[in-house]
Image (cartoon, rainbow, N blue to C red; front, side, top):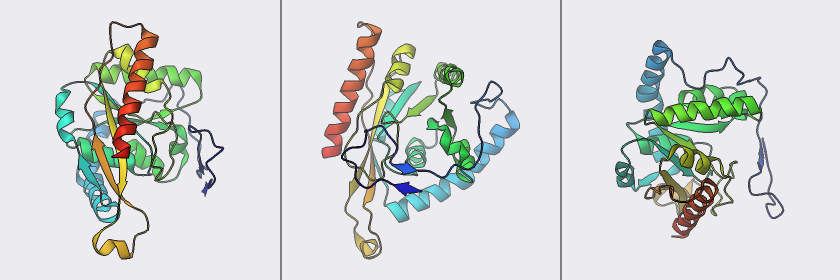
Length: 248
C-alpha cells in the first residue's frame, strides 16, 4: 500500500492510502448485511468475545497505549444511537469495540475492506456493513441500518469518509451519519481519537504516539427544525465539539 505524503492539495474526504484489494466482493441483492443465521451468530459471538476481544485488548494496550475515557456518556443513551469518530488508525473500529464492551456495535465500512485477504474476515467479524458505490446496494444498506436502529442497536459511521493515519485535526464531515440519525430520530454519540506522548520503556522502541479514545456526550436532533436544518445543525454541532476536544 502507498501513502500520499503531501496532504496540502488533497481533498479532506479522499483516500491517502492505496489499499491492496485483490479479491472480488459484491453486496448485491443476495448479500445479507446482518446475518439471520443463529449458528453463524453464535460462532461470531464466541470468536468475538473469547478470541478477538482479548487479542485486540492486548495489542491496543501494549502497542498503542490505548486509554478510553468518557464511558459514562454511553450510559446516557439506553437505546439506539449513531456513533461517529475521526478515522485515524487501521484498528480504530476495534478500539471502539473495546469502548462499547460488553455490548457489540455495527460499523459502516468501505467495501474495499471486504476485498482484502484476512482483513475481510476481521471486519465481517466486527459486524461491518459494506458501503458500495452501487445505488441499490446503498438503499439496501440504509434499510438494514434502519432495522438495526429499530432494534435499539448502535451503528458507527466515519463521517470523514476515509482514513488518514495519525492525523490530528478533525476533517470535513459528510452528511450520511447525520441524515440517518435525523430520519430515525436517534442521538449521535461523538468519539474522538487523540494522541499523546509515549512514556515508559516503550518510548525507546516506539515512534508513533499513544492513542486516547474519548467518548463525548450524546447530541440529539432538533425535531422542531426541517430535515435539512436538522442534518446541518447536527453535523455542525458535533464537528465543533470534536474539534474542540481534539485540541485539548
